[in-house]
Length: 518
Image (tube, rainbow, N blue to C red; front, side, top):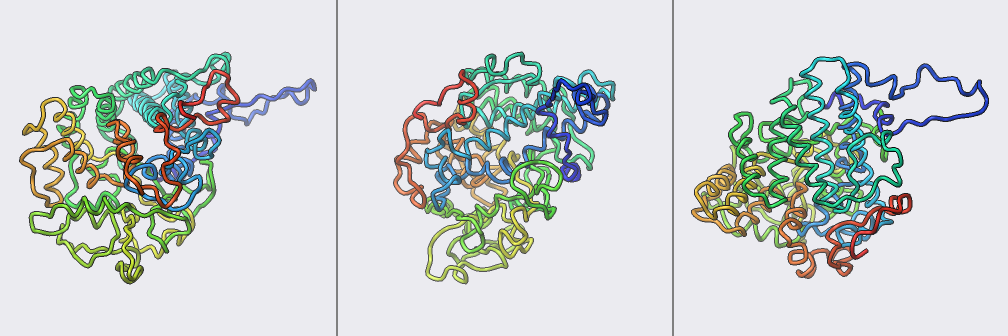
C-alpha cells in the first residue's frame, strides 16, 4: 500500500469541496471539459479505488499521524515530560484552547478523513464495477469514518456528526450542530458493524496495509471496551484471537522496525514512506509522508525539536520485576534509553541501552540520569540523528493496533466481567511469555494497567486509557512534576480532559459551543 500512498493524487483535494464560479459574461460561463466534478467522477472502478485511497491519505498528513497527532496522545499522558512551552505541549498542559493551532490542525485532518469516507459511501454503490471490490471499498470507508470519529469524540467529545457529503446538506451552517457524544458512539459501532460485513479477510501483497475484517473486529471490540460493554468487547476480541491470521511476533522489537512492517501482529498501521519529500501540511504529490514525529521522541542532541524526556516512574515500573532469567524486561530497552550498562539476552540477541550509532548512555550524557524514548526510532537502520534527511526521514510505519493490545483488552474485559479467571490470565500471560516475563497466577486491575504501560507506552494509547478509566486527574494532575519541563498542569479544570472546539468552527457556526471549562 505504500506504493499507493506514493501516488497521492490531486483528486483527494477535490473530494472534500467542489467550487463553482459564475459570471454574467457568457464566455466565462463555459465549462472546462477537463475539470473533475462530482458529475464526471465516480463513474468507474478506478474512480472508486482512487476515492478510497484519498480517504486513507489524511492519515499521513503532517497534521495527523505523520507528526502532529502525537501532541494530542503521547504528549498528553503521564509517561512523557515534553520540553518547552509551545503548540506541541499546550494540549498536554490542559491548554487545548479554541485558538490553538494544534486544536485546529488535527481536527481538520480527521474531518478530512470523515468527509472523504462520506463521499465514497454515497457514490461508490452506484458504480458499475466488480461487486466484491465495491463491497471491500465500502467496508474501508465505513471503517475510516468510524476510526476518525473514535478519535474525534475521544479528543473533543462534543463534535458534529456528519454522515453524508456536505454538498447534500442544504444549509451546512444552520443544519449542522454538535451531537450528543452517545450518538457519535452509536454511529461508530454501526459503521464498524457495516465494515465487518464488507471487508475482506486479507488483501493481496500490493495492497498490504489496507484494513481487513480483522481490523474491524478488533476496533469494534475496542469501541465496546471504551463504552464499558465488556461482554460485547470480549466477543469481538475473541474473533481476532480465533483468527489464525493474527498472533504475536516472536521478537517484540519486530513491531517497531521498517523491515518488519505489516506483520501478523499488526491489525492497523499507518503506511509511512521515506521518499525524500518534505513539506508542511497537505497530502498532494510531492509532500512528505514519512515519520515526522520521530524528532519529537528522539533523545536530546539527536533532534532539532525540543523533544521530551520520560518520567522516572516509567523506568521504575519496568524495573519492578525481572524476567524468568533474572534479567531486565526486554521491552525496557526497546521503549527507553536510560543510564544502564546491564543487558538482557532475548530472541537471540543481547539487548543493551543504546541509541543512534549504537551509542551508550554515558557516551552521550556523562553524569546525567534523564530517561529518553527509544521506541519507533528504528535504531537498527543506522540513522545518525532523527532529522538526518529532513522532517520526513523515516518510512517506519506507525502501528496503532496490535494483537498484543487485543490480548490485554480481552484480559481487561474478562476481568471486569468475572475477575481473575484462567481466561483473563491466559490472555495477559501470553503477552508476558513473549518477553520472558514470569506468568501471573492471579491479577488485579492494576496489574492489567501496568502491563499496558510496559507493552504499549508511546503507542498512542496511554492518555485515552486514563481518560476511559476516569484517572486523568489522579494520574496527571495530582502527581507533581509530570509536566515540569513545560507549563505544568496548573490550567487543569474539570472538563479540560478534552480539547476545546476550534475557534474557526465557533466563528462559522452559531450552533457550536465551547467545551466545558474553556
